[in-house]
Image (cartoon, one colour):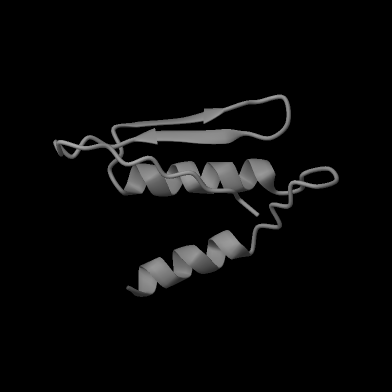
Length: 74
């Protein structure tokens, strides 16, 4: 649990505000991708868009259903 709290502290310290120049958005995407890899996702990609990067991750748990999770960095 302490490592989870430290990971959250690291995440919230990134400015990641999508208005203005988007300071921290790339760093936030990299951290999110790193966390998905650490969780064991088989596929993790940072995708450039015309504004800010997005993160796609896929984890196959062999379950009969799929869950989609959509979040924003800021």
